[in-house]
Image 1 (cartoon, rainbow, N blue to C red):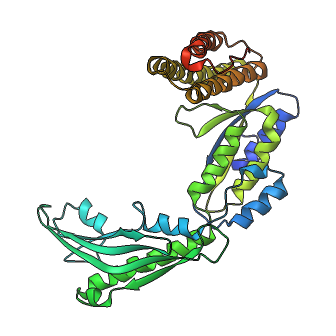
Image 2: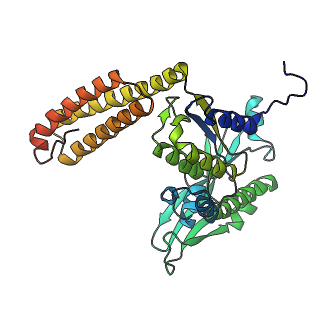
Image 3: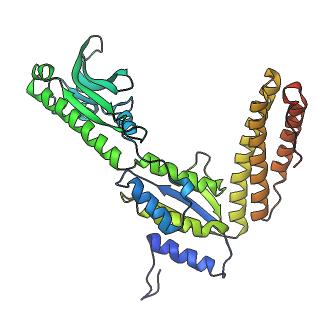
Length: 357
């Protein structure tokens, strides 16, 4: 129980206080666990470039400029806009009908590619109707044209704009409720396209953050990613990244959990690294064996050797930073190195030099 008059810090303020206490020197800091969540917001490329400069982040990790053609491809592509509704009640939410196990003929408005050339990309909005038993299909192939008109007079790659041309005759032939759903879909295409032309997607921003963190040679604490250990030498960079993500808005956040330099913490981090390194080395060993069996060319061999060098460098760095010997990983590295030596000495690798490490 807290003493009277004592306030307990929570949330980011609590983590900052904990970090400050560790970094004060009273308790040695091993590094940080880093986890982040990034969502769609309203971050332009200019926003991101300005923030990188203000926070002293490396601009090599900035993504490319937003391109209208990419926005069009995303919104009208296979994973783009589509709309499903009950034919007898177009205004009802289809997911609600599914949850209640109510049988209903469904209609789906979807986008299908038609053609592409140097002037434009054309896609159609189509209407598909299936009965309850999914045995019959009706198909209206043309409810609207979605056209990306290329602007070939501009220097920027991917320049152009969206043009939506409803097929008024086909739409007018539908019941009023369905007409509203068609216009709803066309409005969503327009709005999403304009948004993606102006603002970066959550996926793109997530990639920026992930690439920057992975550049710091972290250790993945969770095999699937998303939680990393980053050594204390990168504390300032992590602070800048945290400030960057906080500016994304939409509840995006990056959290640094400081780890004290204690045996239990070291064992967790070392265990995560050796497990990941072992998996990577086993995979590399299998690919080397396959390359030997198939007589791979020098380009393939050098890529394998480059991956080996990256793993070797990571092992050396983490061994030094964690002040420990990663004997199991070193042994596995030696075995893979022997495989590579054999491969480099084979006929397919005669023109490549086997560097000593």
